[in-house]
Length: 452
Ligand code: MV4
Image 1 (cartoon, rainbow, N blue to C red):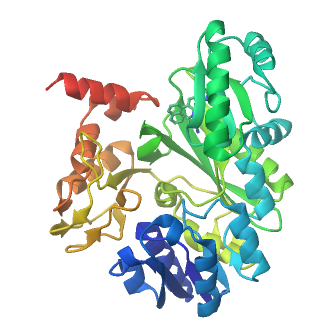
Image 2 (spheres, rainbow, N blue to C red):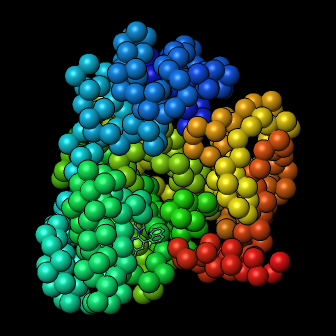
């Protein structure tokens, strides 16, 4: 096992990694920007190194500063958390060169999955269902038109270097194709330094369902089943749950087996998430893969009784999936996560400042992952996620009841948060009946605005 790990992140996920390290008896090194001097990840790590001014580019994204801290503190490994440097293959390579273990997949695999069109073709080859679309990158408008005619409108063009909703254009009619294609191409070139596009049949009102996997160096890949992530606004997830009411045991096993085999064949190691769209016929299609631990990993932990961050560390240290993840994954009850953001619950404007009062809900079936505390300051420079409230119950009804009472007892004063928004979602009949897709929030917000 590692002796000492540096955590290249901040906020709740840095604390989450510290929790796992403490349980494993591994020493921790926090890094922090000047804005995070009084943060809990600094307080609870064994050592802490200031790596620069508040701006991300000057601190948490500054690879030489992060590596210098790791060398000074003499760590064996770096855990990147999510976001920041977590899917940066170059960073993983620099770690390797410096003989520091990067807790994540090998850089080549991260690079493959970062090129969305290559990832898509690799999945297709392994028998993972994908949407009808282009074979590889689309060279020009003429080729795009050919593909669009063969799969039928509407189609969507996506940036190969994009992902997570950036650099996409929906094309509903033939006459819109040349303009949209050119716009997407120059947008992708400007945003990612790579204008490569690919094309898929556009799915109307899809659900977003993703599968969690954990893999080790010996080629064992285990599926920990799915999460339902359709409740999102502008590609930012707001609420996630597991299991999905739409996934049958047969689908779960079939998809789980196919992705496990695929990932084993490409030498995937550590935690990963495979994203799917579900169409109105409840068919699942691969869209992209994330090569990191995700924000919403706790819902999977709650229903499967696992510790995914501890598993990441054990596996990076040379351990086996079978040492840390049960051979047969059980799905016990239902879990829901609400992402609590420091933002206005209706206007969605960021809300930085000092937390003047704070009450953390708890009790049976409730988990709160947060680095927020009374008198703590939320700086304006970073992501607005300040807490994740997770409710677990025997079934979805019990998880919802626990979530509602926990939201009622969650007090955060001094800044705006999305707590009131979540209370409204949890009492919405359509949400409660499980009648939603990725268009849910837009309709919900329009309905709320009309009711005023
Ligand atoms: C799609 C789609 C419809 N058809 N692809 C957006 C995020 C990126 N990961 C993929 N996205 C989509 N791809 C096809 N062929 C609709 C979306 C989409 C979406 C996907 C997941 C979650 C929320 C979404 C919101 C709008 C659009």
